[in-house]
Length: 491
Image 1: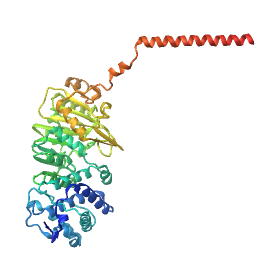
Image 2: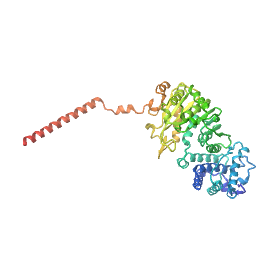
Image 3: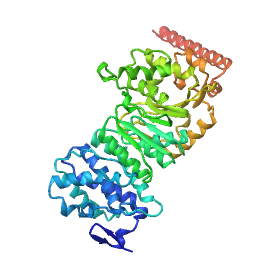
Image 4: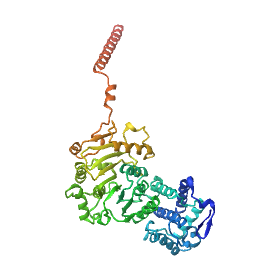
């Protein structure tokens, strides 16, 4: 079988799906291109890599994507010979960005800005490294090519190496997969109003979510999120646009599942809150009162996540550990409202290093729209009691939750298991009395007191040892006295 690619007919070796070797070859392709782009800004490289993967896939699967009138002049295989100047290169970007007009499932990328100084050279370089890789990127009947691209791209975006390279870190894949499992996203609408590169949204789509809605203040991050979600499900339409979470423009229809990783410890200044009425309404919709002085972005995102839920909704937020215990008035009021209202279901304290690029501890909050009278399940994933269970993998300042850890946590949360030294169900009244502190150590045992007591000697044994020691001291005293007397007589 031969398939036409651009003006050429590709050989059988590159015209069939790439099979099991696709993922490692894709990784080599991405890093080979980043090496070619070293003189450019790292964020430009990030944007170009994501965009060119999209162009390559669409170019080589145009017919299957219903693009019967695809302009072969824009085939990625013709790029090297046709990108002689920046205007032609810009035309290629505009062409792919607007293909959504011919297939609504394709992401609308119009207005995207790729700021590389020599865009023509960058696109030609991609064409060269793609050609050298031997990858076809053609889709098979099972859709595994797109899924493999999504996985490798998501792993790249969330990796420590890429994060250090571009100076920004995405949500780790294990956290996104854990959130999708805990919330049971299959058939559900999913929202992330601070979506960044779209890791949560794409992971949810892979797990069977019915739709993905995303918002982010960065237009470039929105582009990457759209492309990542396209590869997760090339047949679905997604609502992902640029908008600040602090404004009413980011508002959406209520979603059944909400996932958010707020900016860690981001302080809000007065001029950051341009839409003050919306800001106050979001906070008061949770606390039932006008909260003044809420100057932390995490607090606002927690409130907005709850306010964005449908009646049967569940929200999962990845917050800093300080959210659990800081006694700043607005934060304490917010925690109290979620606990008192029966909406906070679960708290999972995570080890340091789960957030790439930092050693700080963090936590997952599970919040439900429908209240419950049950207590709050609090889990300490950093407990020494489970350190050797293989639930986390630690090394060089990084800590990843393993597949075994994801499966174990999901069962513990579903069954609301109370495990000594690891998890406990804290009664809501007790939480309120403690200042709405959500740390495991406030309610669960952190020492195995039974083992400590079992190893503790009885009072009688201790007294016997003291008496024996005193007898030895007395005997030694007598010996010393005899020696001194002997010396005195000789003298």
